[in-house]
Length: 349
Ligand code: FES
Image 1 (cartoon, rainbow, N blue to C red):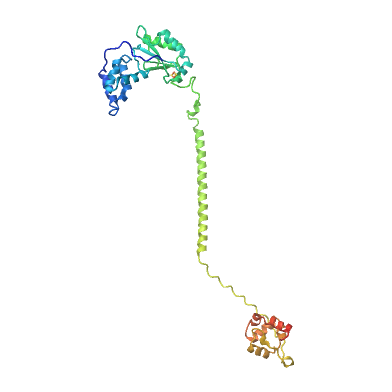
Image 2: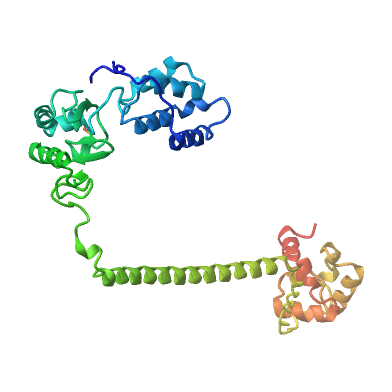
């Protein structure tokens, strides 16, 4: 990039005309009190627009006064941005991009064409029609190489199309702004490479789409059915558990007493009885637990005097004696038979 210096030839004064003065005031009013300096870039732009596409020193001072800025601050800004021209430029001012993407795509040829058609950089053609300047990337790298002429971009240039463009501008022909090829804006060279299947747009996939929708609906219906079945099963299990819990909490009805099995009365059979005690001496039957003097008397009346008589009774005979004693079950309960057997074995001591 060339140096950024003020032009040697300067007008004596500068003031915004009524139109740009109004625009400048409108812009300044957009900023809060004390922050008017923020309007400097648009004001510089207005000055350049009013003054044949370049900004004289007098305009810098005028703007400094309007924004209450030191002149040096205004100069710092205006020399930073290459969009501001500090010296006169041609009627068609060409800003040529020489940055890498444009350079890789043939910007050198464009630069050569600038030199051959217009002359050296920063010089104006004798008829005042053209001047050019090399600048850094102008942000249209996809369409490299490119140039900016005044406010318009011309892209996808080659040597021939650029020379033709300059020739058309020179004679006032209408020019095509933007890509100089058949490319649409920044679309891929040679046409689109993605989303090129027409079925994406012509509606022919609607059937397929509907079938997918049906599958989704079917799956959703199945899921809903399964959910209902699950809910029912859970409710059933819950009710069952609840009933079980209730039943457990209920006091149990008193268990019916089991009917006592009444022993089938054994067939009674009269045991062998004696008319009197042997050798006139009866055993002491009261030694048998459960036999007192009264029962002993009854037994003797029946003809039972000895332990061996009692030890020999079978069930039917026990039943017969029970019936005579009127103490049903007593003989078994006290186990007279076993007691009597013991006395027989051990002898009546
Ligand atoms: S490199 Fe030229 S426009 Fe970006």
